[in-house]
Length: 410
Image 1 (cartoon, one colour):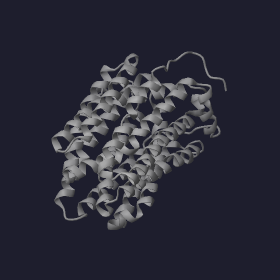
Image 2 (cartoon, rainbow, N blue to C red):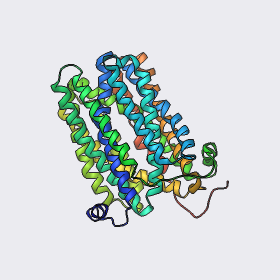
Image 3 (spheres, rainbow, N blue to C red):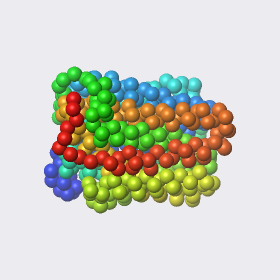
Image 4 (cartoon, rainbow, N blue to C red):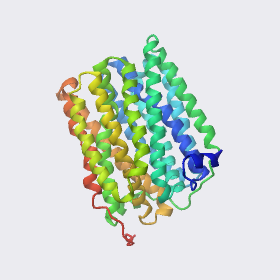
């Protein structure tokens, strides 16, 4: 079966673990896309409070880096596949908690956000470390591209199906059905994780040393600044756009249609990017995509109908793959060539996530401050215009990254 997949993928040099990791990533994507789009709307419909939604997301981004540090320490002492399994299990518990709390979920927004942040932290620490270990420079673009295809497929099918179910059922019954299905996908992912080869790390956990490595390694310093910029856009966009679309359309099914358009274009372009963009063209691709994504924000904030929103979704679907496939590959290359990367790969992943979530936290804090002084309906477009430049400015941090045989001084 694995050999047939290798032939179908035209990648004979991929390993069994690489394919299993892609399958787990695909299951995670479907489970998350089924529900994550609608958790914010679910809480919004209960509280009608922008602050409650922002605080829910803020808790996610506060707990996520804290959990990354804890998970990093665990990954240095136990099998990293177990850490991955723990993350998927906590995500399953998140959806069980939502189901148990039901109509009172908005009252426990901080608890739910914290629980989701813990699940994300364990899952993504392990998944990123395993990605770094299982892929090689010649399979890295393929892995990131094909994972993007699976994520896009989940983004196409999950929200559309969920939106249809939710819009056809009374009150919050549809949400209960969707959260239950997501829970099932995470259980399957846990089962598949038992087939991954065991992987243990050696040495002490020294993430402070890797933070200080910025002083010795200019490439590492630049890529971390780029991740702050990335997080600056994502922190607010990941929830505000969903609420904005719902306010314009007042229909969960329209959210599903939006994700179908966005993910449909992403699916196509993740497939194309893996073949078009070679390592020498990564920086040009990041610049073009970042600029296009920033300009598309103008279209989004002036959208007052579903067709315009769908047009924005199509543009975003085209250029997110063009940005993220070369950007992720460049990030892993920077880590792979950094000081003591073999022993400290976990610490590098942890520090990267700390900087990424610092950008997200800053973004949400700006949102919370802004809505104190400006009514949210008036202020959101301006906030999106400010934070929306995050992906564009990535280029200006990575444009001078280059690799030489010289190692930083420890």
